[in-house]
Structure formats: structure tokens, C-alpha cells
Length: 403
Image (cartoon, rainbow, N blue to C red):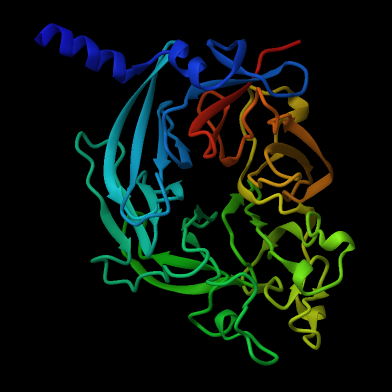
């Protein structure tokens, strides 16, 4: 009996490609893993490395090749978990590090070598090299630093360390577009406790204590996608408002393409328009007299409701030279403009250039292929791009095989 139980546990710990292929239609092999049936540029393919997560969100490839995966599980409080995946040839082992987390989302590797994890209301960290890692509150909890607002429509926390090693934290809006505003301004978007902002938290030293914070950039409805370019520039993917068709006259009452989502360059003190303005500083119908000219316009207009939840600059060498340095953006949205990953060429300062090139598309909707919903997009130590996909509970691996 004991030997049988050990065999069952080992089979569960090492996830075989055959098991994954039963849950997600695949076609052939991609660098040793089941190849999912999506469209990619010539020479690229997407392998399925896990499909048994409930609601995977943030990813963090570690320098040694391991992969951390956040499983939010559901929108219910305290149901989330954090997992560590380790590769052994054509298999990955999976072990749980923490459970009962409150809607975990963002992950970032700090300059102190600690992993920082965003949960509703705060940020925690732990040492990924510890034999038995323990969580320490950095923001909220028992840290002595006031918690983040965790109510309303956008409570999830995303994270990014800037070039100076200070921590940027998304504080999403509580509403869609300041729905309860009664007058020329939106209380939710103003003042020191404003929502729809990115805060910057300062440390006394790497791995030390937070000494204070300030609002780094405003007017950002929900900054799930944050990326740092090698030049030091900071980039944000904006998930713009919904239901504008209920406020303005659109053909067939269809808001599929309006307003556009955005890519913004964030700078200290910049303000980007939400909820007063949308697209290229067009007045929102709720705020027709607001002076949108003083707002910083988007650098790129993305397709409407594309829902960028993750993006990164490709800094590795596994992809061919023309793809190196590009900005990779995942479109999570369930509408026509979502469920794909695209790449932008960039200037020396990280500014996206030209039209996006599809990296992954063809993700349904169709009978034989589930619709993909990419969340985080990260570059691994092996040069592959890892993608969490929460509609089907999968983790994917994009590689170049030549040709």
C-alpha cells in the first residue's frame, strides 16, 4: 500500500505532457512540450507546460530557471496560492509555497534578491533561496505602512522595481469611470489617497524598510501591465473604461473598438487623463468641460478592450535578432480585440514604434480551440517567453526553433 501511494504522489508531482494534452488540444511538439494549435510567426511555437492551475496570474522566472506562478484561484478573498515550478528535462515539478493569500496577482524580483508579491491591500516579500520561505509584510499587514485600498472594481496589485530600486505599485480605480461623480471633478481621482494611480515606495536600503511613498503617476484607471526598459523608462498598459456606448451615440450601440486601451510612458508627476479624458485627450462625456490639454496623451492607442494585463521587453537572445529588444504585450480581453500576444519595435528609449506584429493569435473562439486569455508575459533565464493564461488555467512557453 505504501509503495503504491508513493508512486501516485510522484506521478502527481511530475506533470507529464500526455496529461496536459488531454485537457488542451495540442498538435505535435514544441521544444519537448505539447504544441498548442495557435498561429505564430515562422520558426516560433507555443508549448504547454502546465494546465492544472485554477486562475493563474503573475509569473516570475527566477535566475536559476525555476518559475514562480501565482494562482489567484477565484475572486473570493484568501483563496490564492503561490507555486514554484522546476524543470527536469521534459517535465516540470510543482510545489506550493504559500496558500490562503488574498487575491494575489503581481510578482517582482527586488534588488535585494527577495521576491515581492502583491495581494489585495498590500505587498509581501520572501527569500526564494530559503529552504522554508516565510512571508514578511512590506506594505500593509504588520509592516507599519498603511495598507493599500482594496475595495471596488480594481483591487489587484501589480508591481515593478524602477531603475533606482524603488517599488512602483498599482492602485487601481474603485469604479469604472467615476460613476458617482456629481460635478466637474472626481473625488476618487484627486488628492493624496487617489485611486487610479501608480505609487512609488522608497526603501532605506535594498531589503530594508519602506520610509515613505508618493504618487508617481495619476489618471491611470488600472495599471496591470508595467514594464521597465533598459534605458530606465517606465511603461504602462492602460485598461480603459467600459460602457462608453451608454453615454455617447455609437453605431449599433457597439463599443467594441472604443475607447482604445493605451500604452503610456510614466514619469514622475505625470497625469494621464482618467476619468476625465480618453484616447488622445478626448473629453469623457461625464466631464465635457474638463481641460484635457494638460493631460499626457498616450504613446500608443491599443485596440479597444484589448485589456493589456502583462508586458515586458524581450532582453534575451533565444529569439532572432530582429525580435530582440521588442516590447511584448499580452491582450487578455474576451472581445474581438483580445486573446493574443503582440510585439512592438522600440526606439532607444523604449518608445514603441510602428504597428504591432502578432506573436500569438488564432486562440479561438472556435469549437476545437479554447479562447486564450494571456495575463502575465515574462522572459525566462532560458530566453523563452512564459505566459500565464487564466481562462484555461495554463502556463505556456513561447520559443524560437528556427526555420
